[in-house]
Figure 1 (tube, rainbow, N blue to C red):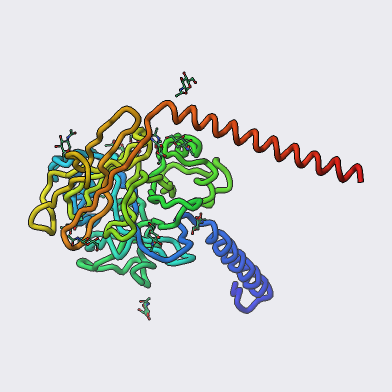
Figure 2: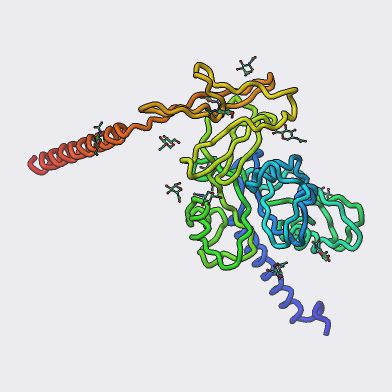
Amino acid sequence: MDYRSSRAGALLRGLSLVCSVGVLFVIFSSAAAEPFQCNSSGTCDALVDYVLPNSTTLSRIQTLFNVKNLTSILGANNLPLSTPPQRTFPANQTVKIPFPCICTKGATGKSNKLPIYTVVPNDGLYHIAAEVFSGLATFQQIQAANNISNANLIYVGQKLWIPLPCSCDQVDGQMVVHYGYAVPARSSVDGIAQQYNTTADVLLRLNGLASPNDLKAGAILDVPLKACASMVSNTSLDYPLLVPNGTYTLTATNCVKCNCDAANNWTLNCEPSQTKSSVWSSCPSMQCQGTDNLYLGNTTSSSCSRSTCAYAGYYNNRTISTTTALDSTCPASDNNSSAMSMQGSWKRNLWLFVLVQVLVLCVWI
Ligand SMILES: *[C@@H]1O[C@H](CO)[C@@H](O)[C@H](O)[C@H]1NC(C)=O
Ligand SMILES: *[C@@H]1O[C@H](CO)[C@@H](O)[C@H](O)[C@H]1NC(C)=O
Ligand SMILES: *[C@@H]1O[C@H](CO)[C@@H](O)[C@H](O)[C@H]1NC(C)=O
Ligand SMILES: *[C@@H]1O[C@H](CO)[C@@H](O)[C@H](O)[C@H]1NC(C)=O
Ligand SMILES: *[C@@H]1O[C@H](CO)[C@@H](O)[C@H](O)[C@H]1NC(C)=O
Ligand SMILES: *[C@@H]1O[C@H](CO)[C@@H](O)[C@H](O)[C@H]1NC(C)=O
Ligand SMILES: *[C@@H]1O[C@H](CO)[C@@H](O)[C@H](O)[C@H]1NC(C)=O
Ligand SMILES: *[C@@H]1O[C@H](CO)[C@@H](O)[C@H](O)[C@H]1NC(C)=O
Ligand SMILES: *[C@@H]1O[C@H](CO)[C@@H](O)[C@H](O)[C@H]1NC(C)=O
Ligand SMILES: *[C@@H]1O[C@H](CO)[C@@H](O)[C@H](O)[C@H]1NC(C)=O
Ligand SMILES: *[C@@H]1O[C@H](CO)[C@@H](O)[C@H](O)[C@H]1NC(C)=O
Ligand SMILES: *[C@@H]1O[C@H](CO)[C@@H](O)[C@H](O)[C@H]1NC(C)=O
C-alpha cells in the first residue's frame, strides 16, 4: 500500500510531524538540564575518570589523552612523583585524567581541542567512543565535534577530536574543579556528595537530575571539587591555583609542589619539589622574607601562634613569591570568640527588646 497517496498516509505524515515536533521539544527542553553547563566563557583545568578498558600503562594513558606532563596525571591520582611511566594498571581501574577545559556561555564545556585520536584499521566511531574512551563521549558527540556527516565513513589515519565533558562554572560563588566522576554500581547521590564534600542538592542541580533515583551506574557525574585555600596572588602566572583534596600539583615551572588535604583545614601546603625547573636554569630560593630561616613549607610555632612560609605565586622573571601565614593557636582565642558570640546574642536580645518596645508603643498609640 502506498501511504503517500492515501488518506491514511496523510494522517501518518501528520502524526509523524507531531511526533518529531514532540521529540524536538523533548530534546530542546532537556537541553537546559544537561550536565557540565557553562554560565560564562573561559578556560580552566578539569578532571575526568577513565575506566581502563584493558590493562595498560601510565605512558599509554598519557599518550591517549595527550597529557603534556606525566606529573599532572600522577598528581591528580596522588601517585608518588617517582612512579615510572611503565607502571601498569589493570583493566577496570579508574584513573583521573587532568585536561584543559573550554567553556562557552550557555553551552556544555568541552576539553580544549584534545585529545586527538588517530583512526586505526577496523575502528568504528562507536568502538572509539564506547570502548577506547570508555563512554566519556558518545559516538554522536564525536561525530558532531568533528563534523562527520556519515558515522560509518571514517578513514584510517583520520584525526578525531574527542570532546570530554567539563565546566569552569563557580558553584555557589566558589571556584571549584569540575570532576567527571564515573558512577560505580550501587552508589547513591548522598554517598557521593559526602565523599566529595558537597551536597546532594548541588549534585542534582548541576547534573539536571530530578531525583536521586535518576542516578545511573556508568554515567559521568559532574562533581564540583572544593579546592584548598591558597595565598596565591591574582597577579601570579598560576592564579587561581585550584588543588582539590587528595591531589597535588607541580607549579612555578615544576619548582614547587603543592598538595591539598582536607584534614589540614583545607589549606594548600606547598614546598620545594626537588625537581628540575622546566623553564629556568635552576629553581630560585624559596625563603620567606624577614623570618629566621623559614623556607617554603616550613612551620614554626611559638607560644600563641604558628607561622608557615606559604607559596604566593611565580613570575616570568624567575621569581617565586612567598608569604608568612600566621595562625593563632591560643585557647584564649576560643574564649574570645565565645565572648564575642555572647556579646552578639546580647546585641540580638537588645534589638528584640527595642522591637518589642516599638511594637508596644504602636499598640499603645
Ligand atoms: C571489568 O568490568 C566489566 C563490567 O563490570 C566486567 O564484565 C569485566 O569482567 C571486568 N574485567 C576485569 C578484568 O575485571
Ligand atoms: C582490549 O583488548 C582486547 C583483546 O586484546 C581487544 O580486542 C580490544 O580491542 C581491546 N580494547 C580496547 C579498547 O583497546
Ligand atoms: C561541516 O561540513 C559541511 C560539509 O562537509 C560544511 O558545509 C560545513 O561548513 C562544516 N561545518 C563546520 C562547522 O565545519
Ligand atoms: C553561575 O556563576 C555564578 C558566579 O558567577 C555562580 O555563583 C553560580 O553558582 C553559577 N551557576 C551555576 C548554575 O552553576
Ligand atoms: C566539608 O568538610 C568540612 C570538614 O572538612 C565540613 O565541616 C563541612 O561540613 C563539609 N561540607 C559539606 C557540604 O559536606
Ligand atoms: C587582585 O587582588 C587585589 C587584592 O589583593 C584586588 O584589589 C584586585 O582587584 C584583584 N585584581 C583582579 C584582577 O582580580
Ligand atoms: C579527602 O581526600 C581523602 C583522600 O583521598 C579522603 O579520604 C577524604 O574523604 C577526603 N575528604 C573530603 C572532605 O573530601
Ligand atoms: C610541564 O608543566 C610545566 C608547568 O608546571 C610547564 O611549564 C611545562 O611546559 C610542562 N612541560 C611540558 C613538556 O609540557
Ligand atoms: C582554618 O582555616 C581558616 C582559613 O581558611 C582559618 O581562618 C582558621 O583559623 C583555620 N583553623 C585552624 C584550626 O587552623
Ligand atoms: C624547611 O624546609 C626545607 C625545604 O623544604 C627543609 O629541607 C627543611 O628541613 C625545613 N626545615 C624545618 C625546620 O622544617
Ligand atoms: C619579578 O616580577 C614580579 C611581578 O611582576 C615583581 O613583583 C618582582 O619584584 C620581580 N622581581 C625581580 C627580582 O625583578
Ligand atoms: C578559656 O576558657 C577555659 C574554659 O572554657 C578556661 O579554662 C581558660 O582559663 C580560659 N582562658 C583564658 C585565657 O581566659
